[in-house]
Amino acid sequence: MYVDLNCDMGESFGTYRLGNDEKILDFVTSANIACGFHAGDPSTMRKTVKLALEKNVGIGVHPGLQDLAGFGRREMKISAQEAYDIVIYQIGALSAFVKSEGGNIQHVKPHGALYNMAAKDASLADAIAEAIYKVDPEMILFGLAGSELVKAGKKIGLRTASEVFSDRTYHQDGSLTSRRETNALIKDHEMAVKQVIRMVKEGKVRSLQGVDVSIQADTVCIHGDGDQALEFAKYIKTALNEAGITVKKIGDFLS
Image (cartoon, rainbow, N blue to C red; front, top):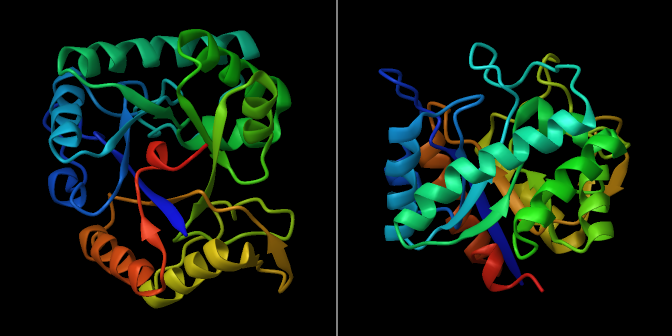
């Protein structure tokens, strides 16, 4: 039984520092690297790519909305064409750094509001999937389990990874609880890990409404910008291994 552990990285910008990428890369298997729209800058992209390659971590493009001030978490009314264009633009930016360091891109995972919008909006999802496919059909598309994004990827012929979240609560329709709500985040590490193990082993998650929801867990997102992010990364990897779940880079086991 395998699962991938992914983490958003490369989110520092200029003099601003966010996350502990170098140390967290020792415990995750895939890195979603910001491409300068919602976070990150050229130097940060280069450094993060180099670190990921040194630690044999799968590299992912993490395209977001062009909203540094809002960290890409505020919804914007963009067209499907605009979604297509910004995804291709950001894939191109990160690809140059990856190629210059002798590596390959493993996956693409939209960020924040773009991710959540595409989870429900089929036209945006189709545009994102098409952008990825036209650049490189070998790249894996990460999307919320059961979402329009996963459906779009499968429809166009991409390999897709159904993503679950260790520190987020779910509604009975399979959607994530909005960060604007007080009960959106799971702050207890033990509770978060128990939720993940159940999602991987049983394919189920308990919603806030008290109903079990069927879910597929190919990759688990952990967030690298919290105060205890490094400690949690260590804890969840150890707990998964103890539960008989091997943590492995998605590109090494997804068919």
